[in-house]
Image 1 (cartoon, rainbow, N blue to C red):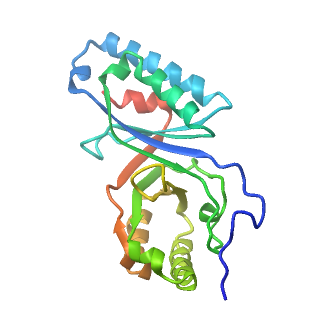
Image 2: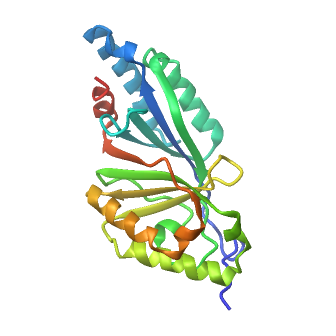
Length: 237
C-alpha cells in the first residue's frame, strides 16, 4: 500500500507566500511626454530595486508586451507573509506610474510539500527554485471534485505518470504552488525553460495523461519573458 506523506513525517521548510501579479498600462500613459514617462519609470524602478535588494522578498520581473493583449508585465514575488506582499504592492501603486496601472490578473499561493511520493524536486519540496531561465509559462489549475474522491493509491499512480512525463523534458523546470483557501484556483503551475517549444511539447504530452481527465480548468495561460526590472519597464513604450 502506498502511504501519503504527511506534514508531520519530517520537518517541512518554512512555507513561502507566492504571488504572481499581472499589470496593464493605460493607453493614456503612452501619450505622455518622453521625459515624463522616463521619470515615472525611474520612480517605479526604485521601489522595485529596494524590495528586490531587501532580504524580505525575492522579486522576478517579466514582460508580456506583444504576447497578450490584456497585460504588459508581471512580477513573481516570493516572501513569508501576506503583509509583506501587501506593503510592496501599496508602494508600487502609490507611484506616478502606478496610477496608470491596472491588475487584470493576480494569483496567490503558498509552498507546501506534496502528499504524494514523487521524485520531482519542484513538486516535492516546500521552497521554490526559480529564475535562471529566459521564458516562463504559467497557468492556474483546478481539479474536478471527482479527483478527490478517488482512492489515494489511484491518485498516486496518476501523479506518478504526470511527474514521469515532466521528467522526460529535463530542460523544463516545473513548480507547483498551493492556493487552497487562499485564491480561486487550487494550484498555480509554472514551467521555466530557455525554449518556448519545450512548453508546447510538454503540454501536448500531458494532455494525453490520465491526469487530464480530472482537470476542470487550466486557463488562462501566460507566456512571459524574464528580464531585468528596468528592461520590463522600458518595454512598456
